[in-house]
Length: 280
Image 1 (cartoon, one colour):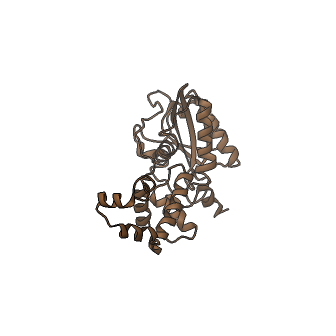
Image 2 (spheres, one colour; image 1 turned 45 degrees about the horizontal axis):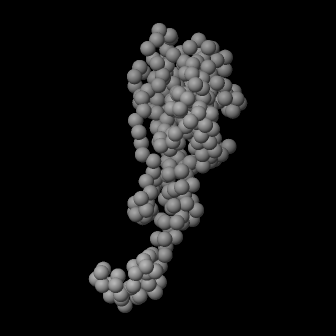
Image 3 (cartoon, one colour; image 1 turned 60 degrees about the horizontal axis):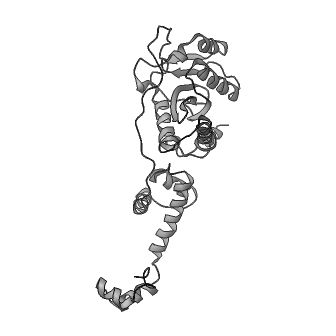
């Protein structure tokens, strides 16, 4: 009635809607209760966080972010307010395996054996390749993740899925981590990881090569999980006209968002950067 009060008489609308005129004016002058005011304030803060994080945060991370800002609220209330506003985190989507393990190249034993825990940085790294579609064709992304902090420490992008792709990602990780030795570096059995040039680089820097069993996605589940987060939070629903456009978008996600801003549930809702600073 308030919305259309300039177009139709109040008495006419009250009669059509079967409400009293006095009841309408009473509602119009009624002040919102403290609970309603708080819910409105909370909804505004939730909306700010939701869109700041590009619809990547669901109610658990939104709740933790609010708690970190000193606002005491539980997940159920946040979830209810998000439902009322129709705010839902980006939905998941299935993606196929990328690398080709059908080759005759030598493979390494599985040193990790699905033990993804590490007591310090540079004990265990994991690597994988994923792909992103653009109007110019596929863009391939190789990443290296430190299992201690879940931080992406090395990455590389190319329009071709070659051994150079994984070599470039490894060189970045080595440079950033100041050339550590005896790190277990786990991957699948893709031909890129089994190539002579990649294996030569591992030996040069005294890294311990570890590879998943053939066809077992659980052997590299940390990277499978990270690839899933990337696709859901940064790729799904986006349309890239060029590879350069996709590259810039992925750079923003990895370096500016994932490593430094995104709260990680497996790290006690700290960012990978914050988690590493705790032991620095």
